[in-house]
Image (cartoon, rainbow, N blue to C red; front, side):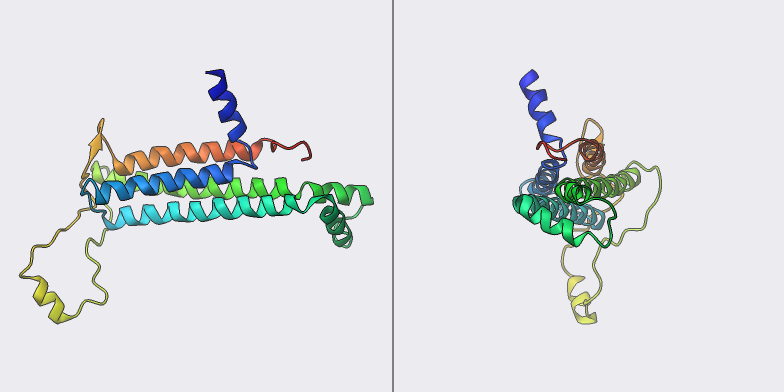
Length: 208
């Protein structure tokens, strides 16, 4: 158990969590696609909206990790150059400017964690909003059919064919009484909290 907690503690750090958060979003996206294509649970428009939020989380996590790793890989020499460039803005000793430049990778990593926290909070709200409609807690507007681009001829032709309409206010699948949207809300809320914890911690390297 201690090995697991140690590994988890090492993962929830600002220099590592952006990539881990991106992987978590990718896993949720793959799970949604598996339900659609393997389990035959086609998504409704609100499900598609929730998937896009995780796409943005994936992009933000990978971009934040890459930017942090790239700046840190430049080393102290680049930090000295950055310290000279900061001179018109940051007043104080040269050592202070150099120290601030050395902290830049940690600042980028914490910014990425903060961005992930905001995106996961939005994802949790989207999931809760959808799940509430499924449980009958409130009503929401949902366009079940994408009408733009549909001509009158194609509309009349589709009337003679069976249409698979996915309703937004009915849960297609539940486990322990919780729908897929509900699980997305719970998982996203947990990822949001973890992102905030990672943002508040120190990176794994010695220089902050």
